[in-house]
Length: 521
View 1 (spheres, rainbow, N blue to C red):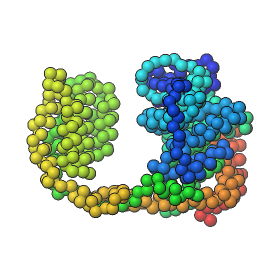
View 2 (tube, rainbow, N blue to C red):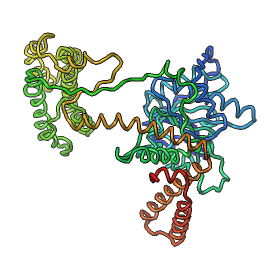
View 3 (cartoon, helix red, strand yellow):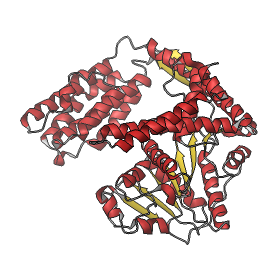
View 4 (tube, rainbow, N blue to C red):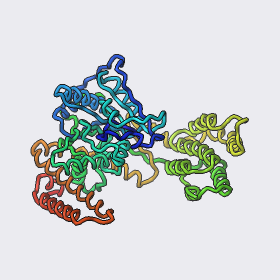
């Protein structure tokens, strides 16, 4: 979880709004910041930054490796300067989806923001407990970097009553807006403010960043029209009436820095026999699973994911990893956690054996056992049993993992692929077809973006109307869900929903160029 500055509650504190056992508030308030680093201004980045100059909402789409965070930072700098010159208050939220990204982005912001601007990083790990008033946190910070769930929790608990306290909100990886994601919940709150205020509430500028807007759940047969509908719906959820912003004028400059990777699909071949894998599965992993079952019978734990041991046969895959994660998260004896730690090592080794050399998988096991196995004097009976399974089979595993034995046939195929090419190796026809379809859909997505940009340039008002229609549909869905879950829906609720539905029908009768494109007319 993360925290941000943003609440209109004067007396509420973060102690009341958050579980302080799960909250870390890192306030970076030093005004004696070392030398501010200058940002490199690349032509294509200038082009993207200019899109924010008017203060509208939009989504920036740029490939991986081109420096989208630098673009975001320059937008932040210009926003702070512009608001200060106008004598207006400015508060900025930057959302990253992972704690590690929060750390990285906050460090970058600190290195490039003028020391007169103060930043706050809030993440959900316990370092210390301090009740900090929401009002004080907002007042002291110009920029907050956090994960979206922090604000979702604050809005639900009323610790933060409104997003209007912020002047700019930036979402990294904004394509998650179409999913059941905290980003969606934040923008739903934004839309409720917008649609209920009749223009009387100050809304923050919203900027989205992503390497790919995707095509949603559209089928390949829907073509560009289906992708276009998905993208317009994403813009509606982001209230991005500025549409999609891409590099159009300085593509040569972008090509110098962007990580463009060619894709290829190769049919994989499995080893005819794999004694290394057989030894790990039969002689080590299955006995460990039996140990977990046996210890469970002797304990008072409730039967949870343990019952899936027999059915979870996909060892060496991400499915088995997910099962281990669920098993580890259960409240059970430390003995089982020890077993899970060993299973994780062997499962990862099997994954390496599948994609790399068996020798690499063996080296991984050797390195990890030095970490997870306690010194002899500190071993429990379970530790001893697991260590014995390892040592009893060690010589056989080493023999079967010699560099010139049990060669992976897929490495020979991959060695023939040109450098800089992303290769999908699969022995399954369905996965091969899926990867081929993904490649084609990426082209469809690019075509839909170009089509949308051309239409916005020709008739921006029609695009705005299309956004409004999608937003009203979303409001009907939200209101319908609210009324259905209410214990005693009021007559006013039903009348309000009926009027809203009627307005949508009227709006959709007004044919626009966008509607014609989506319908394929």
